[in-house]
Length: 84
Image (cartoon, rainbow, N blue to C red; front, side, top):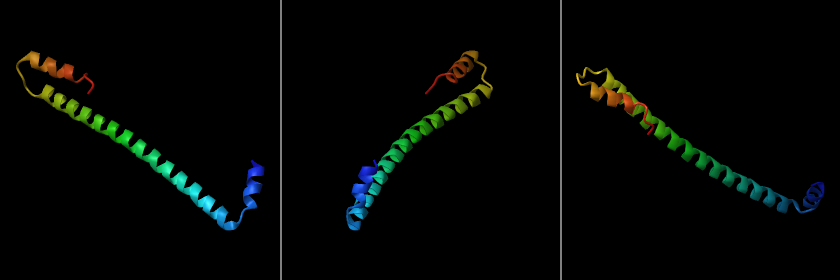
């Protein structure tokens, strides 16, 4: 590794600067790709969690409303345990 550094240090300053800029650009592109992938994965989970919470809240509300038919309440109760 030190041999590579010594070889690069012997190059002209302008070439070293261009090499450094190129490496920075590659690291920047890879970082953007990683952030984009992580953001897409998180937003998908976030949407799924939000939909699940809304459905769960809706059925909890339906369970609390006065309904005389016990079959309907049983169905609402079962829907609370279904994963979206």
